Image 1 (cartoon, one colour):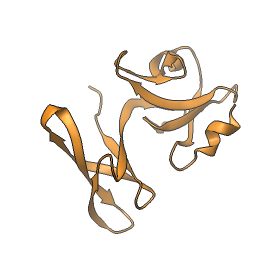
Image 2 (tube, one colour):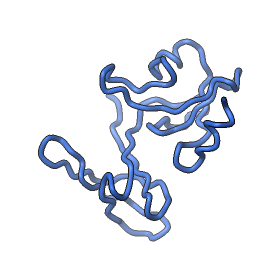
Image 3 (cartoon, one colour):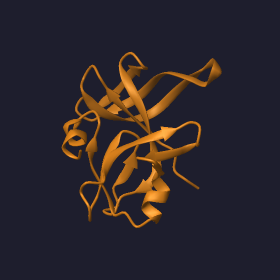
Length: 129
C-alpha cells in the first residue's frame, strides 16, 4: 500500500514543513494543517491557502531513492533537457510530469532525479528550457 503523507510550503516563513495533521472541512476542503517546524523545535499551524500550499507525496522515489512530491522539479539524468515539475492531474487522477504520468516516465526508462522544488528553486524551471 502506498504511503500517504503531505508537506506544506509555509509562505510566511518561506520554508517547507512536514505535515503532522490535516484539518478537513465540509466538502473535503483543507483549511489548515499542523506541521513540525524543526527550526523552532515545535508544532505550528498553517492556514490554507492563505499562508501556504499543500503537496502530497507521490509514493515514488527518484533514482537516488529520494521521495518525489507534488511541486518537485525533476530532470532526467541522461538528457538534462528533460526537466519539469510534478503536479496532480485531477481529471486523470495521477501525478504527472510534462505530458506523461510520473509512473509512465519512470517506466519509460527516464532516470529521474529530484533537483529542487517550485518554491525554493523556481529558477530551475527557466534553466531547463
